[in-house]
Length: 299
Image (cartoon, rainbow, N blue to C red; front, side, top):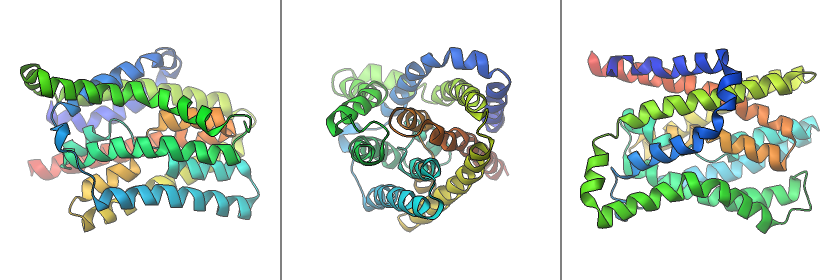
């Protein structure tokens, strides 16, 4: 099966495009798949030994500073709030909960990716409401209301598998070891979740595209640029700290479903088109990385 895995993501993208209506209707299952994916990855890591490093600090600083800088500069230059918010969300969007799946397959350290997944989602759950109270379209929502809404979205798919895995490691180590045997299944579960997420995203682009063709095109172009910049800078930064793959994936691979929800809830809804295209670019790049990696290993 390993020689075919680099084709799994392109197939998921193609099926999501062809059957976007169907996959959008079953996308409510995605959180359950994410729970299973994270649980299978968390049980393979000694969660009691998680530590944060300077790589995590610089990655987090990049997301916070660059997202604010992009919003202010694009808004000043273009006078277009939708474009400014779209750029901002491409940087501010938290790391994908399932980032450890691809990262580990490419050779990244599981401890590094798991620790940043927890850190980034918690920090963004605080930073995002602060930004939304200033620039959001719902000024009546307080920081605490926004914070609790975002926290409710994060908790089931991040905290619940984390504490389930921690409980297994502490009190049911045999069950934990049994689950470890099936860690590779998480990649295929992620492919199914990707099919549903992409289908919902493509369905959303079709719905938003009517009458907004210019913003759609700009979103497609600039999200590709942001994807390339973040993967590239992350790899450069990761190389300086001994884990090129982890740096690139942690900065470049985004939880676009979460970002789209935040954009639709707090910002100009059309700004979410940036992240809708971002999910396509990041998974095309992930497919290429898997292909290059498997080819290098087999040669």
